[in-house]
Image (cartoon, rainbow, N blue to C red; front, side, top):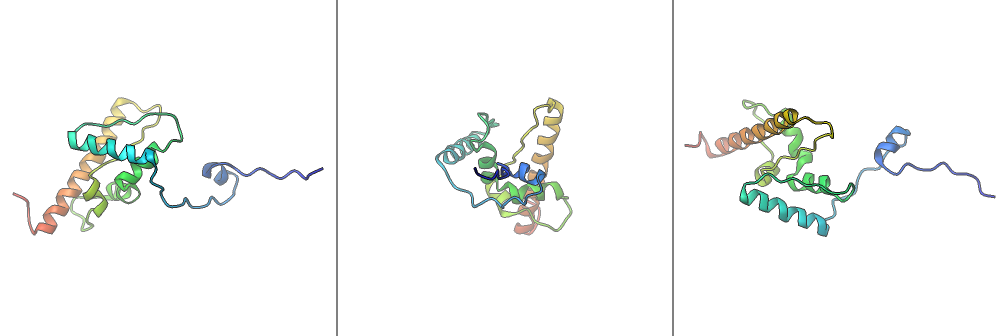
Length: 140
């Protein structure tokens, strides 16, 4: 007869709740699905559309979007950005010019509009500010 071993949680949230230190995620692996996402995102950007990704959970939609936008660096900068601060927008924001927003199931259209507008405005201001600072003056 075997001794019963306590089961380990399957995800980071469960392991955190159980008091077990979650291991840091490994490096991002570019998969076929991520390449398809990047192709989709490039087309959305080129044609000036709003892209909406949907599908079953766990296939990498959010992770691919965050990687494409460099969101782990850009997101916190947008939240903290103030137009007159001396902190430049990171290069990832200049390269991707992309925002990522993952709404909750119960998000209202008004909240969705406010959050996306907030992120869009901050990104636009940050990029414009960086262009002006690097060119030596206001763009005219």
